Every structure is written in C-alpha cells, then in structure tokens.
Image (tube, rainbow, N blue to C red):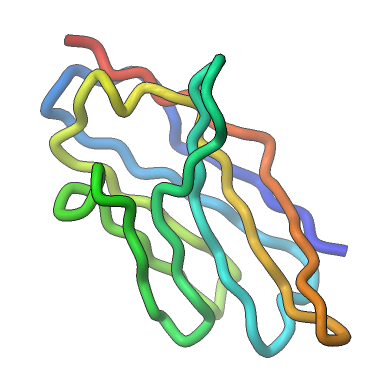
Length: 119
C-alpha cells in the first residue's frame, strides 16, 4: 500500500511561484511513474507533468517551460516547481503514482492541494 501526502499549495499573484511536494510512503517498486494532475470543478482532471523512475519527464503544453517536475528517490518525494503562474493555473493539484506490480499498474492519489493564482 502506498500513501501520498502533498504540501505546498496556496495563494499567489500572477507571475509568482509555488512549489508543491508529494511524499510517498510504502514501496514504489522498481518501476513507477509519478505525476501531477490538476482539476478545475466542472472539467476533467488533466495531466500537468509526469516523471518516471528513470527520470524521463513529460509536460502538458500549457505548462512546458514554466513548470518543472523532479523527484528525490532517496526520499520517495516528488516536486513541482511552478513559475510564471497564471490565473488559469488555478486548480486543485493532485499527486499520483502508478506502480508496476504483477504486470499491472496500481494507481495511488494524494489528497489534493489548492493552488490559486490571482490576477
């Protein structure tokens, strides 16, 4: 069983920065993908960025160049550095990890962190 605990959300003015953290407890196995999603009420949950256990990164077009995903495998912790924030980045941000176990992926989610960007 994996548990994810997020921290670092908050209120920031447009153009500002925030950093989200996601600490994982439990075994993540030898291969996994950690990711950040965001959700605006009324819309679907969208992928923001992901990073594999081999440090391969992927970003949504809307955040590429402004957000940076990283992970510290020794601490089982993932980060999302968000710069040049825009009001449209306002959402609840969720940490996710997909763990490969017995030839299938197990999905785990954090509790969500509110990020609000004021204009």
